[in-house]
Image (cartoon, rainbow, N blue to C red):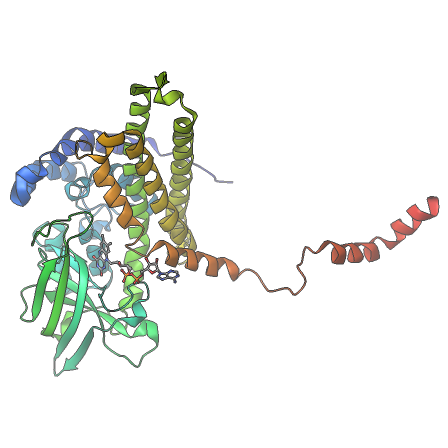
Length: 431
Ligand SMILES: Cc1cc2nc3c(=O)[nH]c(=O)nc-3n(C[C@H](O)[C@H](O)[C@H](O)COP(=O)(O)OP(=O)(O)OC[C@H]3O[C@@H](n4cnc5c(N)ncnc54)[C@H](O)[C@@H]3O)c2cc1C
């Protein structure tokens, strides 16, 4: 009987090292990121990236033959919990989204040429990528509605379509575009992934969309979400990533582990917010006591601790399942943690912000930024409602309809009377 919640001591040492590095070297960068600018940031993290490589922790999501560490999802999850505490830590460890997910699909489905041209430079940090699937005119929640088309013309694909929210699209060297290649195929076999160099003629990057995260429009910002028109974009036939019609299948490979990593990163953010909540509860005095003496605040602390513990165990369990039973066995668990984890993050950050009053709302603390980040978590990689729907559907497959509820007491009583007739007769004969 194996039921083990421990981390092996060797890996725990690595985790302790990561926590120390992120806390002492990466957190300070947050406060001067805007002053550093994009180039300054790259220069500031370069020596840290070298230390991560020396320590054998660079791009840990990939198999060793591709320069990664081949960690399973449980180890990766524990690692992401630490990296999640700062928006800048994943870049230091070579696994910042969307490059990490894109490198996974290139590793999975790329040809040797595509790996040479895109994957290895991506891993080395020499190229940047974006994943371009969501469209303003169709519901991203139902990707079978995608309209962007890729049509074969001789040896080339010609792409036309309108995308938005392609994260890093305006700074990317190449985009992985999801386009319909066969509109007559079955819904989940209509689309394919195509690699498009960002400087290809017809790739018109209109803007980085101002969002809650970055309300002021600022074109060409790392972490920006680009709106892109693909207008008669011609790419060679071998730009197809994976087989024709395999777009959704490959996307699923990207999304499963990605969601586990998101959830663990959210726990890193939640923990940081929770620490701030507790610190403030003990420090702020109002109405005759410190806030930690008020029951509402105690409830916030206890509820947050319980929610985080539940989300952490659920996420690590989903990761364990993925490692041991494969991605499709973990599908429901992953949907569960995606919406549950996003809401835990949202609740904990909200309480931490609330206890700080006006200070929490100000940019003197990182909580307002965490709050904006937390809101997006309930949308990207599947909105809450879509994951809930998916979980409910999976669960309901294990049930069948009954005209009379199977627990209906009078019906069961009648059956039980028939079953125990001898005993009941004997009991009533003795009366
Ligand atoms: C910060 C951020 C980064 C992103 N990065 C990328 C990226 O790099 N590449 C990319 O391609 N896309 C990206 N996206 C887009 C993201 O994947 C989509 O926003 C998401 O899939 C939802 O699609 P939609 O916005 O079109 O919303 P819609 O599909 O229009 O859904 C809107 C709302 O409808 C409701 N809804 C939908 N379906 C159901 C249902 N079955 N039952 C009940 N209610 C339902 C939900 O409340 C949902 O929030 C990003 C989005 C954000 C916010």
